[in-house]
Length: 203
Length: 203
Figure 1 (cartoon, chains in turn cyan, yellow):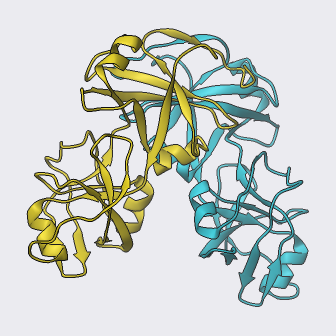
Figure 2 (cartoon, chains in turn brown, purple; figure 1 turned 60 degrees about the vertical axis):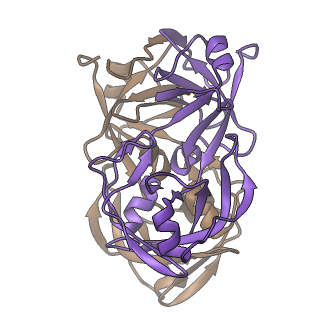
Figure 3 (cartoon, one colour; figure 1 turned 30 degrees about the vertical axis):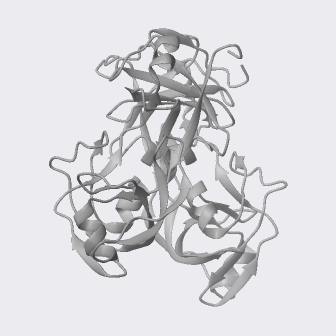
């Protein structure tokens, strides 16, 4: 197993992507998101800005906004968050928000009532075309990824996303990362086709 | 896959098992736990009583006490809970609390400063000996369990526990159940040895 190429895994904590219109509604006319920290995908960043998520059952405060702005606002939460907010969001690939629930966003300069855009992110791997070639997969393939440790898991239903602008990185939400007890520096092994798994946890 | 025997899966929400001494410290001298709801394992019950968990970073209120009493107090939390409380509890089988952290328990009649006893429960399956024979496993075996759905997962490092007093049931914590989007009525398929898994999520 040790010779196989490993994929870095990062947990995406709940976060919000905002449209221009909603940046202005929440933070004021003409406001620009403030760069705070580089993310794994080139050009993406965590912003200084935060918003509160207000659902029918509860509120989650100080949720990070990610930049740059997008055409449509999208809120990515975990199932744990859903129970707290009192909403039921489907599992979706980023950008696919048809028939998803909304919620209320509150910022320092105003609030937005979203009609839709709340999802649980489909677990996925970003790959540069060179990575895809190396792993023998293509954009929109479904694969499995195995992680070890005391709470080993094989994640099924992992979506491969290939783009010249991507860097190799698997994204899970916090529930998924916690279920496998993953922390900084976690990696996984790609399983692309029928393969043998061994039930011995010490292998 | 549909002909294989399926194992019921239930998520264990954070909970507390209490010793006699701690029942009295938290709820008053001579207090007896009040039966509220039957649990899957014969004789086990959710009590009416609840306590607050107080860690160095935060508090989780109204955590359910399970009965009957045990020789030693044990607190079972998820990794999500750990971040909220500010403690780092290891993954352990129930009863194995050596070198685990403690925390403060607060009840209506007093508080207890635990020196140890806080764990993340090792994922496990309770089996009657008849189930173990049917599945071809024995007490303390390690197996894998596959669950389907949109967020399919194969859980590795699943501990088999066999006893005449047990009823077939797999226990996960809430992070693990949420990672696979499991709800009421969820079931899984046991994988006991080398086997073939297919990466196609539609199988």
